[in-house]
Length: 246
Length: 274
Image: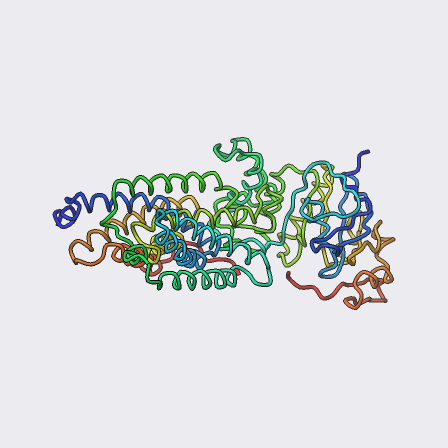
């Protein structure tokens, strides 16, 4: 089976001569959800930038089945921008639409279908900035669906969303996994990551990669988070702290 | 009442001025919407000021003033963009450093004994003095501005809405931020003859501010900004004729008055989520 994402010995960074991320080796198969754990500044977003082709790579190799779709944290989008939820989803088709053509009818239908899939068909005309945080996150995921990418990179998709949206998003992740898409989810939440297929721990380098049961040991998490970690020995659980919005 | 409206436009001079403001409205309105959405209002104000040394040098060298204005504005835009690339400094510092330097240089050159006596007209414009040639130049530049905004519409929207995600959606943020500043510079050059480089900012920013406060969608805001700029231009010329005040300043004041009225109007845009 062709892997969804293969990263071999990746090192790179924006500043000349200084790697923000080094020695990353992992392979995620189609239909796998990979939790990317690490402290703030630990390299989670840098890894995504590398996979998107935006980070100067000094060593290593990436193999991807086409261009990934990126879902940023919702607060990074401009809330005062005069666009509807539907307008935002339609942005997922811009890269394949010549500037002099209207977005294709098929893509417009797909945008409506994507909104329906995330449970927001009734909010298509709502102004993006007037939606709740969880609804905005679902709109951005719908935009990624319209990009028709096999690999989705999601930056803290469940951070700060309401319960209804979190349940919707989790169910959607399961559907996408069943469709054979590969999802990389950056998160601070160790408990969330324990539910996914693989976990990648980063602290400016790869600390560990593998099944959650093997990776999420107190030792690995201490190495990943350094001083930003509380270990709850009784339940064998560890919780990353230092959690904040970027 | 009808005569009060039509009398000012009986004269060929005012007719040419009206055509000039209508041409400029088509470029200035939509451009202003993008400038405000990109939070480049300070840059818009400053780029027009930054053209001063270009104007003076062109006047001293006997070159076309339009050419000097273009060179000055492009120099200011490039300088601002370069300094603003350093994220520790940001766009505001870039504007302050570059424009202060260029304005100082322009002032020094303008104070020389050989400075042109009509420099003041380029600072405050001469809307009633535009020639057929000026109209042709303004039309060509405005046409280019509109075409550039149409070509870049989707990329500008991607970058303006969500800069971090825009590269993954096919837009290059730095390229389009620079392109917007370049288009702003071109519009400044197109409008300098009529409104002057100190007043044209009102026609760029004020109708756009009004349109953004009234419209809920980008396309509607862009269209409304053209209509409001044209309304401000026409009303300004009428007031100028009846009150015997400077045409450029009158247009600028009407544009600002429209923006104030729009801001005072009951909110049309929905309340944003927390």
